[in-house]
Amino acid sequence: MSGSILKKDASVLIVKPSSMGDIIHAFPVAAAIKKTRPDVTVDWIAADGFTELVRLSPHVDHVIPFLRKQWGGAWWKPSTIRSVAGFLFDGVGGRRYDAVLDLHALFRSGLITAFAKAPVKIGFSDARELAPVFYNTKITPPPGAHSVDKLMSALGGLDIAVGGPPSFDITIPGEARSWAAKITPESPFVAINPNARWATKRWPVANFAVLSKEIYRRSGALTVIIGGPEDMERGEELARLIGPPATNLTGAGGFARLAAVLERALLTITNDSGPMHLSAAVGTPVIALFGPTDPALVGPYGKGHTTLRAKVDCSPCREKTNCSRAIECMTKITVEEALGAWESASKNRENSAKKWTPRFSGR
Image (tube, rainbow, N blue to C red; front, top):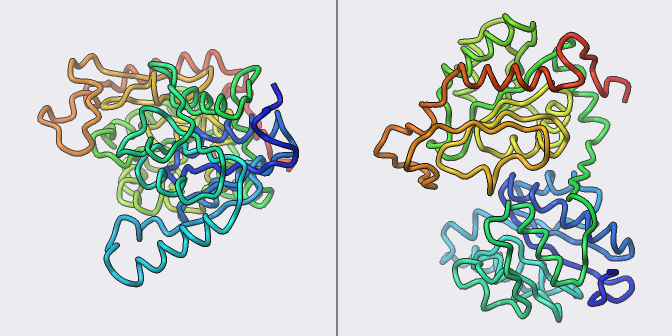
């Protein structure tokens, strides 16, 4: 179908402010709109810390940033009220759209949807924090669907039917690729992300170190450690434990450069995190360690990835910080299991460590 709700040269606003993985999961929605209706303009509202990430999608025409921290901080201050009101009335309400897709499904994104000038306001029937009161078109997502598939179901509100699997279509700038080619090892390497926002999602750093050194002993593959500025301590600890085979890029560059690094890796070994989803989106195989969350719902999307879980009866619990069982769901995943996943991935990978050449060194 061509999207009968959308007239020629229509405009659509996507509301998906954060976080890293959630935004990446929504990229196929923008891709599907543009591939079905190239004439449609797609705008995207994102928290100011994620605008660079959204710009990695070639299907987004304009990114509208907002100061996310103000919405969760001292909102009663006059300066905050003026800023939020200005964003809602001018930044959102100052534009006209044919449809709005609230893919965030919380009160804040619902409020943004309410202020947007559009005749069609689409959201999920199971959205939280009273967000559905702001929608005039409610989509019931398929039960038990992966996050990507759930978000894609919102396209039904636009009468857009998608053929084929969802595509992320991330475009990495040449500058980022050049930087990654210079800063990463010339030899084959594995990207390791020992980080996650939730403390309960983190596999022990010492385990990552043992795994990295054993991979190096068996295959010669080096390690590149990745993470954001907030992950410096774990990155430095892991680099110290691994020693010379490790290159620590924690806190280096932004989303585009991270994507370029992941694109060059043999595979990525990671906790459940944003970089896990970015690796999958750029086509690099993932070995992901899961505990309090369910990989069927939020695991690396697509084929060629491996998820590891311990058999713990309380998992998935979605507990972010407080665990009465010493995070058994993560600590009981053994290094031997992770090595087995590495060996299987190595056998299945066309560009094995012995055959590997940098895939994008000429760009």
